[in-house]
Image 1 (cartoon, rainbow, N blue to C red):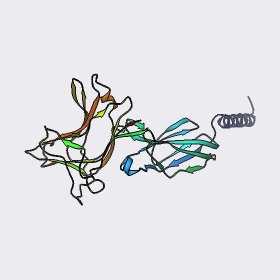
Image 2: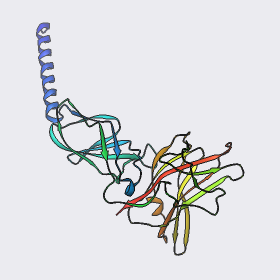
Image 3: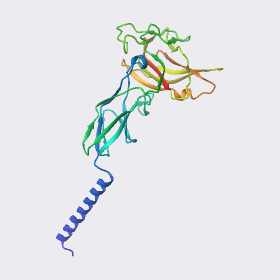
Image 4: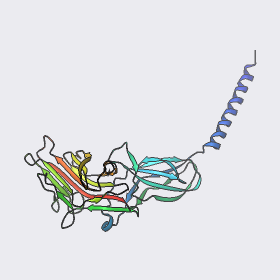
Length: 292
């Protein structure tokens, strides 16, 4: 029968070899990570050209030396298996159509680029970062409701007009005025469309919007061609509980879904939800963007 002391020594020796081997494999194949942290990303705009700087940037899509590390909801701290100096790009991410499960890079915002020196088991804090609109962004339409007239028309079907909030109104989302439609039990349908029709481009099209509604608001497109007129809802916006929200709505699939059309307008429509005395729909900072 083997000596128990010898068996214990042999076991410890084998265990030590296994530990050393595993450490060597860890170092060779997957180093102890460095870390990046980022608190938030905001956008800076030239108001006269690009409109409001309101945004809803929720995620950071992180690339190191051109390779995607991951998409992270901010604030975030995440590992990077690099050491030394590397090129880092942060792409601003959004919830496409306001849906948490459809997070995408918003390509109308510019990447944020750094040279970062990574240290093993240390944290590089990027804090709050700034982006801008990309130089190839083409603003087909901007409406902030601050001018003497607005480029949004009440449709023939609507029983109430679209107007602007009064100066100092608590309903105003930003600036001095916002657009507003109010329905009641008699006049219970509101609908407005962009004054201009836009050529449908061979490129992505997005609608940016700030809104505050106490009734369901439908956002859609009216598409026209030589012998076609198609009104298509794109998204229903839910009640916001007296809080203004920012949303990015992708119009591209709807605009590409039909043949024989070449122009489109954006429309907003709502019936007063049951049980409400008034339906209140407040809009602001409307932008329709494509690429040049």
